[in-house]
Image (cartoon, rainbow, N blue to C red):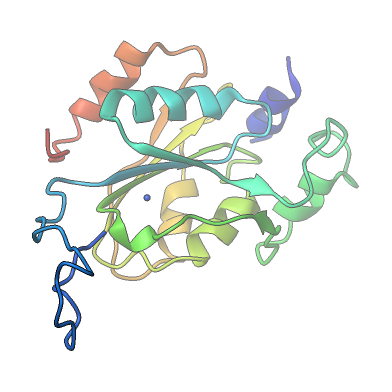
Length: 201
């Protein structure tokens, strides 16, 4: 059993009119107004300590031609950190503290543009890793549809998604789904296409 399974089981230009005051269009050529891109913008955000969740996230992003964003911890998790049998391991300490918020390296550029956000994570101790709470609390998801998904060697999505939902305001959360790291893109997209969402295709 690999370390992620161990941890899991114990749990994206607006063109504006030429500025006023421009008197010589030839000196400041402007393209005609171009309508903004139409359609639904989708982001797939994921945290994956050992690349299991990453594969599922890539299947979704590829299937929807969506943007993808990896939630990267400022301090990467080591194998020792992921040892759920160690009461002093980093993940054990974090998961035992509901207020723990591990720092994230980088951020999503222009979160406002997205209509639908998939959020993926492994199950640790029956919950989403605390770094996913950090991510959820870092942005305004008002008016967006959130689709949580998790990977686990056995545990279901449980209360992990509803606990994350409580950290947001004004977002429409769909029921979470547990997926297997070995699931094919066809299997994953069968679930995605069955959500009843308008992906603008």
